[in-house]
Amino acid sequence: MTTLNHPAQELLSRLDGFRVEIDADRKRADIILDRPPFNIIAMAQRDQLRAVFEALDEDPRVRVIVLRSIGEHFSSGGDIKGFLEATPEHVSKLAWNIAAPARCSKPVIAANRGYCFGVGFEISLACDFRIASETTLYALPEQKLGQIPGSGGSARLQKMVGVGRTKDIVMRSRRIPGKQACDWGVAVACVADAELEAATDALVAELVEFSPLAQRTAKKLLNDTEDAPLAIAIELEGHCYSRLRSSEDFREGVEAFHAKRKPNFTGR
Image 1 (cartoon, rainbow, N blue to C red):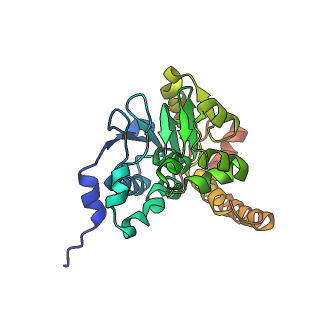
Image 2 (cartoon, rainbow, N blue to C red; image 1 turned 120 degrees about the vertical axis):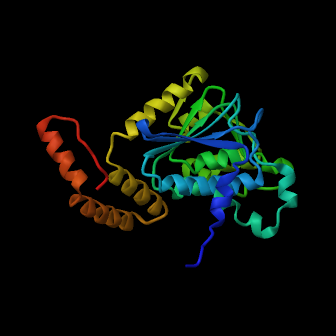
Image 3 (cartoon, one colour; image 1 turned 180 degrees about the vertical axis):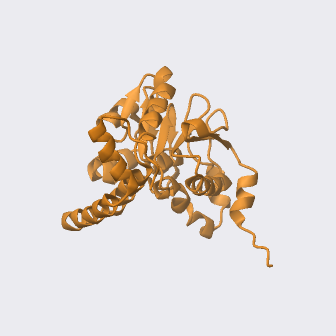
């Protein structure tokens, strides 16, 4: 029999600047940026982060993924020197790697504090939920280097806050505090720095109570219809609703509602 090798296995064997922790009891995985003091994200690390998200997406122990960091800052951005050393082909994959949280079928939470700049902001924008602490500063500072965001940051931000605010952030390299980001809908909450972990834990605990099948369906539907005309989005929503109508989780949810008990969702 021919032995097959997958490059992702080599990527996962020596994680660069971060680690992964799985808590099967809480159905949770944490991807923890750990390159103090600023958690700079290296070029190789981008490939590894993509591979880790793909691996966790297939892990049956995990229902929710949290992207967080060690220290005062989430991430001050990428390894600047690495951009000049990387090949054009490698650079062309930057946005694909950083979009891994969006492609992942499971809910992904970014817990942000301190500096959340450049690729740190971009990968947070690719997550489903962002919780900011009052110390958080979001920025896309690439204009100061004679560049623009290259991992989806300006595109995702424009969808969230509009072209005017995005121009103000990108073209001026402005730093946006967590409270303002929350007011604009970029973050779902802005909490005291000491409460960031508790707020993240609470959101994880809330999300794991829902049907994993319904959550996967909702995430994919919302991602797929972000740019769709209203009529097409409604049509696709109807098809998704129809498919879930025959699921065991929907039957369980209806029966639990009528019996006034907590549902036991299995993802089928």
